[in-house]
Length: 222
Length: 222
DNA sequence: TAGATTGTTAATCGATTAACAATC
DNA sequence: TAGATTGTTAATCGATTAACAATC
Image (cartoon, rainbow over all chains, first blue to last red; front, top):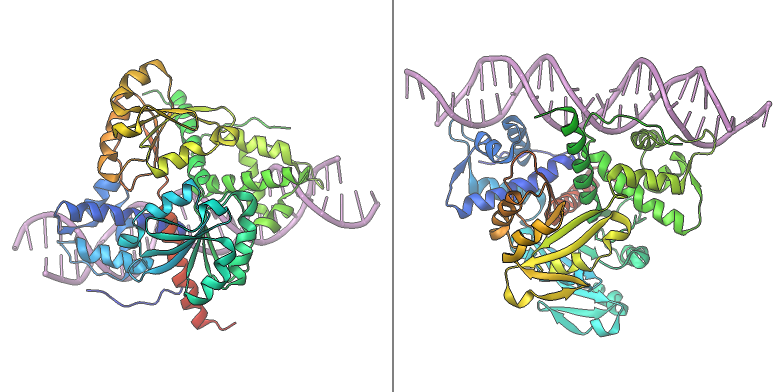
């Protein structure tokens, strides 16, 4: 059963990151043929507190059953709905380099609803080809392309130097969602949503944690 | 001037993510020839509160000058030191697919101190080649390889099905830092640091924010 | 000097956790 | 039924923000 509710506040970033984790754990459970789970069971897998998991699930509006827990399938689809992954988004990619190519080759549409309809690159030799059946055009054709297709998300995977320029052009052409893989801080109007997928944020966490685990190892002897 | 201090508490994740953002903004400032900056100026660029930026910088131990602010070069190097990016890490990659290849091709060592010494893949046709001058070996050779080289970080870019298996082997061979690009929740002993660089976490934030900006647009008319 | 910016100390805000009655 | 798990309400914890004296 799904309770309808208004989400007036913005969902916090830690919660959204956890939702993505729940999502792939649920996929694993589904694959294993497990039909029901609970905050306690998920807690054992993820090492989050059960109450935190219950609080998170409440945001989706899904209501569980005392003693039983939640249906794996229902929970997965509630999370996908909450994150917008069940609707489907039309997306374009800028920059068909090695990272861009890797992104085009991933089957986003199956689980995340991200449907790449085209890619653009300013290097001539990379355009007018197909990558994973997605056409790659020269950047010059973007303006005319976007007039014909209703594009919701643009993914930026160009070198840092040209990222701001690409972003400006995206904003001019009415794109509201930008997924930025370049190592640049993009300046865009407030109504445009930019999410930075930079690896370096993640690397910063790893390398600092390594330092911290070393120093704490010196203080507390095991 | 750098103040020495003990970092007994673990640095929070939001702070570490912001450090990575400061880092590339500082690179941009340096490139523009700007020598000094301040929490106020960074605040204008990043739209963080000045006090938050000052508090963050304090963690690095760097001391600023009233009225002037901070030296761009000193701040950049203080951040790199804090994150462990100035020391340099030896790393290996597992999975030389399209994403793995993209990772090998990026010049990590210049800014982030990540030095890929080898990559491994279980597909025969992908091994015994060089990608960006980094040798790719068959996975079977990993155990003997690691005995000869002091590897600190292993990067997992294999399909979800084999990720846990790779992780187990890494732990057996004494690796303490894992950067996981596969869509799997890895189970490892507590002394091993795993950082998940999954794109989906970032995508979850983007797609949910797009939903939230739509609904709030209906409520608050601009 | 005057004023911008620092670092410190205290207040606020929001996220996480605890406690527990309700329930299948 | 008994007991596991739910959702609610309240408490705690930590991160962010505010206020302001110190300073170049």
